[in-house]
Amino acid sequence: MFQRELQKGSAELLVLSLLEAGPRHGYDLAKLITARSQGALRLNAASLYPLLYRLERRGWIEGRWVESAGERRRRTYRLTAGGRKTLAARRRSWDEFVRAVNLVVGVDHV
Amino acid sequence: MFEVSGRAPEWAAEIRARLGRLRLPPVREAEIVEELAQHLGDRYAELRAAGEPPEAARRAALAELDGDLAEGLDRVERPARLDPPAPERAAGGGILGGILGDLGADLRHALRALRRSPGTTAVALLTLALGIGAGAVVFSAVHAVLLRPLPYAEPERLVEFWLTAPAKGLPVVDLPEALYVHLRDRSRAFETIALYIGTGFNLAGGDDAERLLGTNVAGEFFDLLGARPLHGRTFRPEEETPGNNLVAILGHGLWQRRFGGDPAILGREIDLDGLPTVVVGIMPPGFDFPNRTELWVPIGVDPDSVDCWCYSALGRLAPGATAADAAREIGRLAGDFRKLREPAAAAGEPSLAVTVPLASRLTGEVRAPLLVLLGAVGTVLLIACANLGNLLLARSAARSREFAVRCSLGAGPWRIARRLLVESMLLGFAGAAAGLLLAAWGVRAVEPVVLERLPHLEGIALDRAVLAFAIAVATALGSGLAPALRAARVPVGSVLKAGARGTASRGDRRLAHAFVVAQFALSLVYA
Image 1: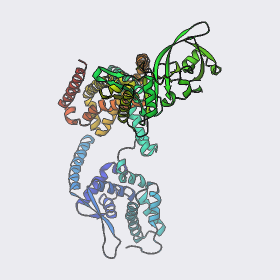
Image 2: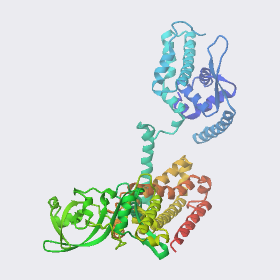
Image 3: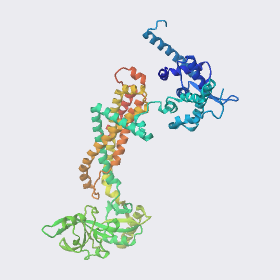
Image 4: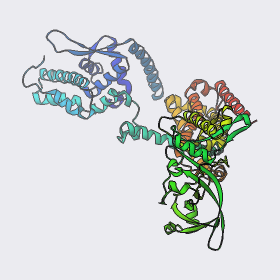
């Protein structure tokens, strides 16, 4: 469901938004997206990790291997300052986009 | 929560199987595999904990890899490929293929651009063709006359020499036979000495008599010049005595013209000035020393004669001896000779000799004019370059909007500069081709004029394709670089804002002024 919409860049917004609250690793992010969208949105590993690496290359998030006792090391991602700015801008334009679409589509209660 | 048992599926292999064709750096690949394996392991463990049977859990975990993982990673992990790959690159030509493919695109673009402004292109081509054509003709002449070594063996050791008596107002005094014999027997600075004097001969026989340019020679004239006969032999020492000198060597041209190239002429008698003369040798084509000579006959040397101070002398320097050494020695020996002849004059002024390298004597008359001419065509070519540069600059100013649009679409400055360079390079090559055609015609026109003054030349050949190439490239670079660099520094915003028309920036105008000033200055050379 909505896989194609996710491909088109809004997935970036999802990941950046989730990381705003604090660092998380990939599997956590995938579970959170599914949970918060009540199962409507799903990012599998094949989509999620290329996306994470892309955001990392652009300097918006930063991944780090974190070791904790008794567990395998995990790669944890956190939002960078640049990512925070991008997130703010993306959010704004997303809101504008949604409002514009709703105006056209005719959702009265917005 | 984790099922850490031997039955836990091996995720890494599955993941690697899907990355196989990516060829990531090994360290990076290991990292990605580790992270993804963990993700799959977490998913599997979660499903198992929720009561899924192992096989169903395994399938569900593997579904995490559905979609094109490799393609997604490929786009991210190779930032160079963030842009959609160019078709040429996709064809797999590697780096070279990429460059060539881009070059092909640039060439097509350049052809289109040149066709769009046929007037500019025609003027540019004509300018280049004339400049390069003139340059190639003159350079060919300079090369043939000044740069190509004499067609004789070890030309740098060949010198001409004569005596000089400035006090008597005689800058050039040639040698009499007796002095030649004196020098020949004593000189150490010279390996060998020869004597010659131009003469006319009447060749009779058959139906018509013919006046020939001939040369009387003595000493090892042919050996000294490194010339070997094509047929027969050169003269023997005993043949340069009076009465024994009724032998002759034919030039190749005369042999062909008069005797049909028949070697049977060797040993036969011909009628020279009414004297029966035996042909002993035939020289190869191209040898006509000293001056369009068709026939050589020995001097009947009289070792006591000082009647005629009229023989030109030629020597080959001994190894290690310089022309200056030779001049000093000849002066000293000539002084001894005079003391022997006229003891009374022994206290007079010292004898002096002058030695001149044969090459510079032969080219001396035309050297300066040729160099002046070379400078002149060089300047003409520079003016042509400046003209062309100005033309291209004007055009690139008119196209600055196009460049700005390209820039804002993501073309780098180097890319735009390269397009312009390819354009001017294309112009340069086309101009050079036209110039060489002109030059081929020009050389034929110039050749007789030069040959008249430089008889030792076999001809001027337009074999300077390499030079033309160099000129073309230099021209293209010289005239195309400035506009190209300017275009590369186009301030995108201001150009786009400046409206629909192309505008010349202040920098463009300054550059154009510089070109005009340069042209004016170069033109003054001709004033």
